[in-house]
Length: 381
Image (cartoon, rainbow, N blue to C red; front, side):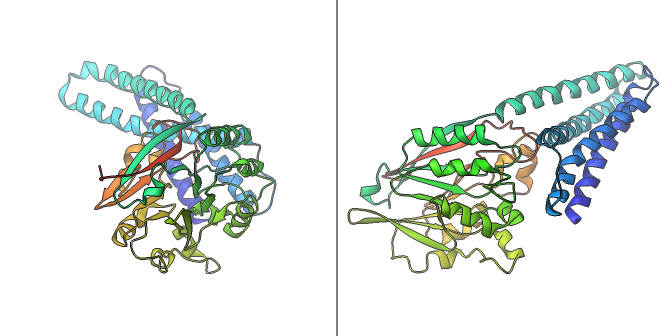
């Protein structure tokens, strides 16, 4: 409930500020500013819809239709983007007030409001378009320590699918088809698989059972699994043929050479004593000395420890790269590793920006990512 109150307060603050500033900018030309407050009040009511849906869902009661959930999330996207643009507009208004003649102030206020409105419409249009599909992102990684037999080994990484009311069967069918057409040696899903309590609320999960790879399919939990019942979803993934890695590793063999693939649960497991907690040391404690190791970790916060323990490659997700502006910028103040490839000594971290999306159906940092990774043996680049 604390989360509900916090988000409600934050949304109220954003919409209240937007209503106040917009009314102030137009009052000289259009005195009916009460309609401005009514507009943003309506937006706030729509935005509270997804939060109400969560509350009703956890109480086992009927929830609104996906249409109203999607509309509410779009409203949240609009308000969060407009809020930032409006702050910039107000900064320009202040500069005009200090340095320009009084006769220009009203024109400046209307101009900055118009620019903010056009900016939010452009950002929304781009975000809605880019969130509709997932695209293949190819990544070639070179390691001196890679066993020769695994030179050219391919991995498809999916992450943050968030299957539920927003990510449906059409989207997942497209993702699975594109993944299977790549014919990877191995498929991994690095957490935040779902946003639903059970398979009946997210039937598209079953489509992942159509995925196949000669060296297997693997899954680690993300924070959203623990919000929805991680034990249940780990069981679903096992029934679909995925190996669920919880502080353990699997040995992949080609001839006499080996590659170790380990996985840890999400740190959210610390909130529930029923679940095993993430432990990088335990995951590879019985690994042979000098073995080439890959770690699946939903959150990239374990990369420094993984690098210190000689893990060659860490694959993560979680951040969505911020997903859409302004969060693509803001997230950098909270996450040391945001998206893409990072190096620490000889160790590499790759963060998938999200195959799906969460919340507002918006992306301004590219389409959802199906990452096709090819491992090479050779000097580190």
